[in-house]
Image (tube, rainbow over all chains, first blue to last red; front, top):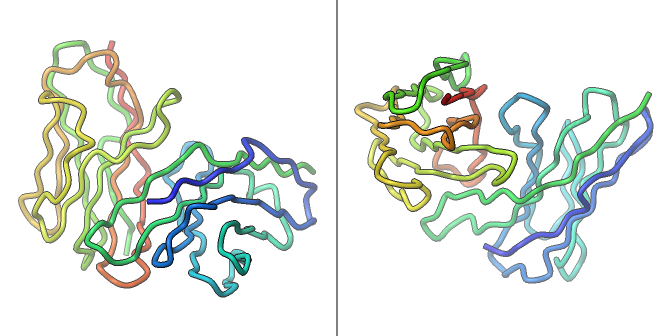
Length: 112
Length: 114
């Protein structure tokens, strides 16, 4: 699976959009971009995933660049409960491996 | 569904003792994963099962660790004998073999080996 690079920490004001970047310059054509988050003392939680088109769900939006070498997770109106570590993971959806390889992620702190 | 259930939530034991962690996946999920999380190493996959069969145990640290899945609704992770360096939070997760492969994580078991 391709490696990802994320900033170790970010801050965001409550009510503002949080934009979390992820670099995955070695991503392969069959690899998807996944985002999970882990709120303190809880298990990781799936947020969203995408291949090349932008995706949106009730939690967030995922913007993937045209060359697919980077992406941005957007929380449109961050709340204090969005304070968590956010993990960007790239992996192939097929190929027999169901593994998720977690890096260090970005610790997002939402401030009041 | 109640989600992935893990027990116990906290375990404190002494070095050399046997520890058994338990997991009940979400009903209908055919994949089950065991992870370990420490400050030093982050979140690591230990082993995963598909339809109760171990598929990849390359993350299991050593022979002291073993995992079983006797049926679709129950799995155990056993450490025997336990050592202080095994202290960590152990997560169980499950997923469907669908295209999205979203993994649902349990609340974790915090293990402390004295």
